[in-house]
Image (cartoon, rainbow, N blue to C red; front, side, top):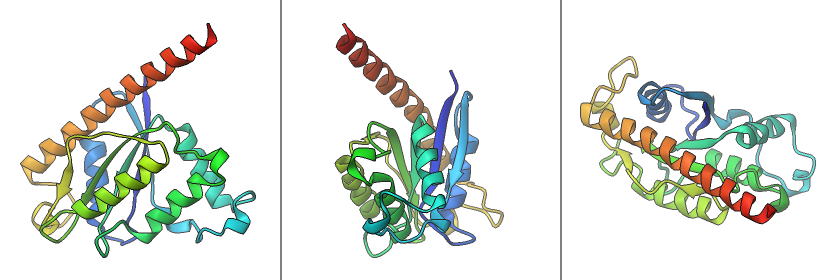
Length: 194
């Protein structure tokens, strides 16, 4: 069975390390996956007055999340947290609460930073946000791409072999995690139907 992965990049920068890290994840993923890559550049600021009748760009985004089997978040770190555009997209997807499109989705997180900590604080915050939305976040491995300028070449290719190993492992684990969660949810539904 082919799994549909929605890759969400939290950076709008034209030559973002996080976008190139997302491309590397697609390259290093096991066979049997399809990818839809998304950057929240067209998502307006969340306005609760519009949550029951959101703009078309939000409806399209929510549909992408709804139809995905699993999610891959790739986040930069700004001021010790996730990028505002990523948090904004997450807020839109969670509202109204009865229509939370994130609920029950398996997910993985990774991120790249020019600094020495590789988005560790942003990833902790993102895990906390997703936990509150009932997203099943893969615990391991943590892919924290530090000193990103030394890990990618001038064409945006991930060249650091150790980092490539971690990204490949993350994608293999996401597939396994997704299949386990899908089976568990199917077993629960079957039990409830009896």
